[in-house]
Image (cartoon, rainbow, N blue to C red; front, side):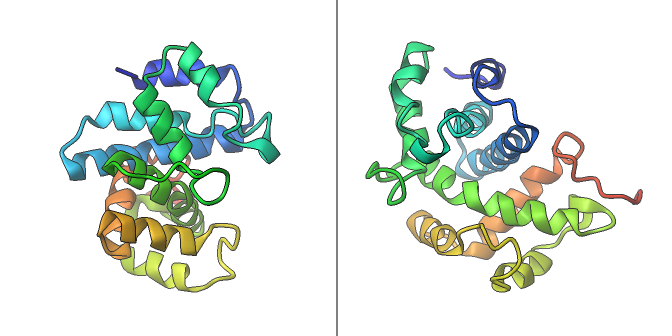
Length: 189
């Protein structure tokens, strides 16, 4: 089974930009929280989350086209590769998210961008971020405008969950990794 350590090893070959490494860490933290919510293996889901943008830095216009063969050759399980491919559903491919892991990755990829942006605006970072504050920013289409809100809502629908609940789970998961995610803020709590 894929571990976080192995995912970081594999990703290191392709992902070097600090912002992309940070994004991988954010998705990793959120996926760990989603795994706990569904009673699944936290580290396994975190590893898949960390590896999800494997080919993005080198092939932004062909994202996910250079993922499957490379990850299978690196020993990543076919089900995990499928989960990674499914986060491009309707955008880059037609690999529909079916499992809770796939649906979660599809949803949290964009969601973590908004959460991260919210946290960066706060003196205490993510440490005191409430879902209510997140929801206000989510409704403001100009805030973190590049994050696809329709996709997030579609993912929540696939999961059969309310946006507030998914956001709460992800915020709590990201709080556990606040220092690693550079989301502690500028003032000590």
